[in-house]
Length: 80
Image (cartoon, rainbow, N blue to C red):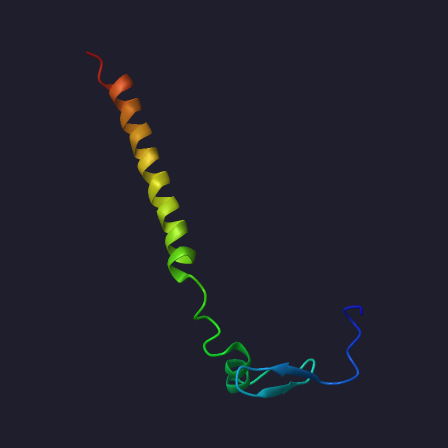
């Protein structure tokens, strides 16, 4: 099926507690989405890793840059 073609009939989604009728091109309501996903759609996302990972990488890069700068200043700026 191409991107422009639509199915002829509605799609039935099996939810944890009930069936939800989904019409292609029509968004599910919050209640229907919760029924299909089994609750909060974002509850299974590892936000600690999604947010903390990049923050830790920035912190590590900043620390390395500071060390390189300090080494350069010590070698070039302070001659014994």
